[in-house]
Image (tube, rainbow, N blue to C red; front, side):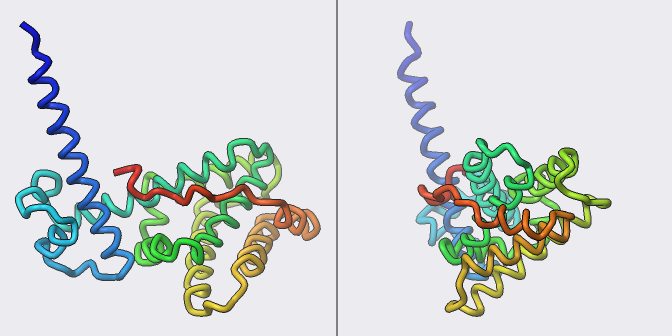
Length: 221
């Protein structure tokens, strides 16, 4: 006897669970972007348009949901950067390209930017998303002789700090030129990592890949 109906029912349930989880994560991401993480679970489920019981089918606590929401944003964007820089051979250019794109993201995707700014410490400690990619790119540039870095942890910390400070500056000064400012910060980072001035300027003047389609923060949900 065929068990196809049972399998179809299981598939429908799995899809429904996936949609519910994605809705909860989207609602959490919106609240994080607004800086409103101290809200009751009921408000989260209402924003997601799901029942209270559905929340506990996926997460034990509100904090667990917010953690998953941040990880989803960071990892989806990190995967996008990997795709956009896949054809670049010079690791110093990969690092610069990723930083220049992310700087522009603060103005292009303000909600995603606020998620990053409101979770600054996770930039340095998370096992996925941006932090491990920054570490990987800096290490590759060091191995290739393009960066002169003695302490990888310090280099990652300086990069994350520069990115966060840049984002806050761009939010505080909406009329500031995002491209010029981001490229200037990127050039300063390159020079701090041992890249000569002219080479750093050349790297920061290279054309950037198109960010379209915009990063889909739900894809990792």
